Image 1 (cartoon, rainbow, N blue to C red):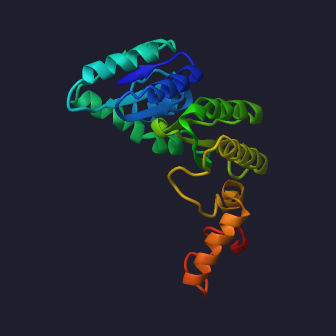
Image 2: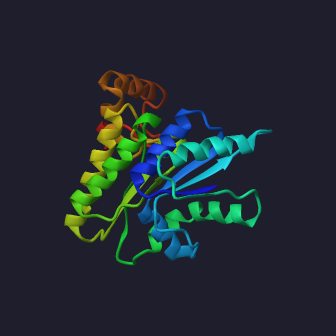
Length: 240
């Protein structure tokens, strides 16, 4: 199904309440209005340029009841439309729009490219707060920041689209990325819900897990890889 909301706050809060109430969904995805606009430009999907929630229901029985339960929750958050596709091409088109997001960001403007793609994950109760924070920072830094995510598990993707040849823009994008990660960890979440620690996130390992835990991780790696040949510099900050 596809739900259209008046504001991103409404969409994020509706997701939090639906998941918290135990609505039985296979997938529940968030697209902000910026992402919807980019996807429309890329693949002509005809989506409303508004915050969207995509939902896929699964159950051996009682799907109609789950849809009705979800609709009630969404209506309490001002949903403007909630359309259901029962298999077929309409459902495929819906999820194709979700798959096109990365390509849509790359092709939006030849002068702009994603900088520091983030994939923070937070407890679902904190998801609306972190979504709101990303958009506040986008306004503060005057950046175009699409955000979307696998919202059912509190996973949010965000990436400023900037001219990577402009040092000032890159600096603002990096500051936004850093502050979102710090907020996610502060909220009891993680710097990375899917992609894992790597060169782009290793500086947050101690912040998230603490020095003692990181020392233990490093001791295990040193015991198994005494010569440091396995992915040097990819996890531990002191290997940079």
